[in-house]
Image (cartoon, rainbow, N blue to C red; front, side):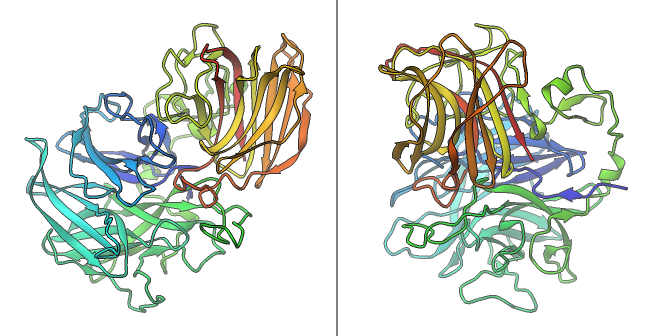
Length: 579
């Protein structure tokens, strides 16, 4: 029996999906915000199984995120393909928590999805969420939303269109508003063409639980566009006529549904990828300054997929009745053609690493990042799943050869730094997670630290780390930062010098228990000692953080040396298990 598609297809922090098909291959690009490298790319041949393939923005010359704030950086990439070339447009947000946003829009191209990708071409900066459309007459256009710093704003929302000159690598011709509205705010626009209609497919009503997706159409790319209105016309005052939304359905798993992009299969089937969120059991306090009483989403916004259908009057809507997202979706016909037997020969060492391997359709086997569990740092390259904050982890920050089989991390700036942190992290993908790291670290002063971290951004984290206290000596402690307020949740616990220490955490729902133990030789059964009681971790969420609210919780390892001498910590392994 053929597999169903199970949502979310990209779990944990994977928002703003953009999808294309090139032959039999599907690719999704998602936002990465302040995390490096820029823009995450996944590949599939059946829309069921997805593999992380890399990042287009891997050079500082392409992307410099030093100094950007939480949840700024790369917003809403749009991936397209035309004439043998991949096109990626995206926004680099440099200022957001202010009246006048700085939203710089760029384009990079490549002949191969794996690169090399070009240096960025600057586009217009009217607003964020740019999308490139390739018309069948060879002309290209970019649509984006428009920010408005005026008080009050002229319109609640507007979308702007301008032509792109590919030969001259520049925007050209007039800039025209193709959508203006007093009440319904639209963003994340995409244009596609079907049966001589131009369709404007846009996210509506913000990014929270009221989020949705609207569709409009016109015979002319410049408009005017008419908005789809379902026959039942059911909606509350001020709401959009969403073809997909979770609003008013708190009981379903996939919340915040919206910000879609479309793909047509080789068999003429239509699917929409969209962002969504899975709520935790926590809510903000009723007196919270922002998002009072709202549910918290530690996993951030994720990517799901829905099957679509055309109506008799040529509107595109969900294949199922209604407009709410489904957890399971019928796969395309190509899924049966590309299905392979899963009982394959597992590559040597897979069981020890805890990984699962899948065949890519051409006899090659690759480890899926979604089930990538343990990293023993035996490679000379970091696994693709890791990301760092704002900067690449070059030789000044890490080494995988200084001590073979270990990751050496050189202590740099503190955890509040927006410039030079030594930190790598992976996405939290479920509310049931265990993580451990084994390290060798001999700090000399309290300004030298290394350990295991659960973080949302530079102001919000739980950090179990080894340091040195002038009275206690080498020690372990637990630091909490919540919207810039710092407190230690454990005393300085003395630990023995010269021994490898294992740091651990167990997350159950939104409660996390930290622990530590000593490694004895090659013994894998390590007795662990709890550090304090379970700690509420729900504040590491989109709704609870003061500045950023567009990413998701990450789990990682890091090292700081505030003396400036670069004291290093060696990590033998790092393991994350989610259920």
